[in-house]
Image (cartoon, rainbow, N blue to C red; front, top):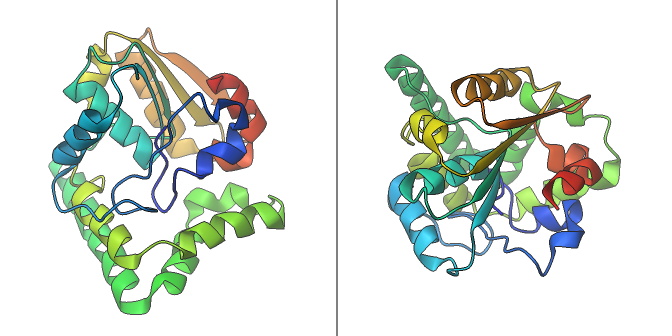
Length: 232
């Protein structure tokens, strides 16, 4: 189980307590207890695959973790009989979009290293992508914010530098060719990623697509019980 950017393995247990003891949630490079990445997206994928117990044949990933899941599926497609991707992007196919994303990530890195973690988290949480979270209970948002503030700025910066969307290869074709069972979950109010999910389902008709009404980018936070039922 692979978390999103600024998250950690702990994000899964509030959402899916029934899976604790039955699943492995890891901290991705640059997050939580994991060291900052110094190698490429593909290299980090290989490291994670090499460290997994042999019996692991299912992968679940949210947002950045969904991109890691897609990378694992691409690098070793026969390893996994089932994959679940939540609110993720399979990669940029257009060179100009890739250049724009790299420039945007560099701006986030400068903000993080120059202004500190608190100013970075303030700006990160104010993005339109997360607007649907405004009405969530204060305790839920505070727990998420506290976890973000506990991250290491150098770790997050290295994650953006090495594993940002502009750095990772396009994984659309490997996703379409994945021989196992693929489930894609997205919030109906997350319009950009809903469009991506529908494109995935168009390119790979066998994909099981779940669109969650009234939910934005982060189903782990916004509808944990519903998401937990889909994952058990």
